[in-house]
Image 1 (tube, rainbow, N blue to C red):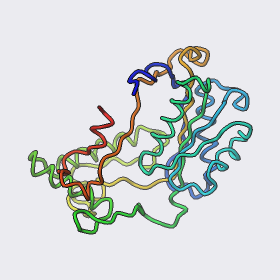
Image 2: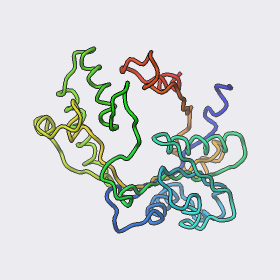
Image 3: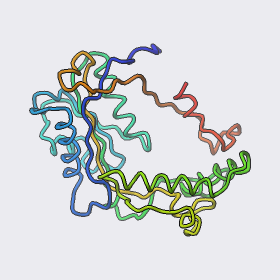
Image 4: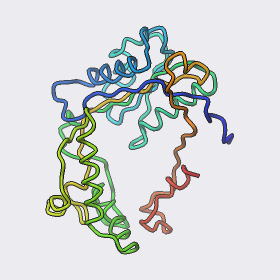
Length: 262
């Protein structure tokens, strides 16, 4: 593998997103349009039908596949590719867009991620988790094993988790398009109902509808869009044996994260 194949060759020149939340009054195409056109405006793109050469999109629960994006943005006469890769979906769609620009295939592409899980009639994650070392588990139950092991190893506790929840909720109040805009205190976090010990309600992520978009282009062209562009230095994903079947998994680190970072 060439470690410098993409380094500093690709620039992010525009970003956009829709309002995240329970968007009952919007369908996926509404959210895609809102995110993409904010990214267009951010990049100074006035004619996306001419300037966007390819689209890489990601969604875990797409109802119409690539047509959902092509129809929403009227981008028909160019390739539109769909990525479905669980929690890595957005990262992978962006990775493919970066590769396509870095290798010289395209000058400027749109990357867009979207999902509308609230329309699926579920109140929480529906990821199938078969169990942990023979025990049945929900996603929260799965990660609770890791938290408990971390507590025991590093002398941490629920108060440490609570401070993270307080920080995250505060940051949510600063973001104009975030779903949750309520400050919480350490005391409130600790008093909330337990979902899967040691995780309480405020330690768990809310499930929301939303869409986000990025415009990426070749470094040499970036100044034609804006002066304050961001260069991509590197991006990677990796896999490892399923922790449920890996006797070396110690519930303290994720091997795929170690491999991707390396």
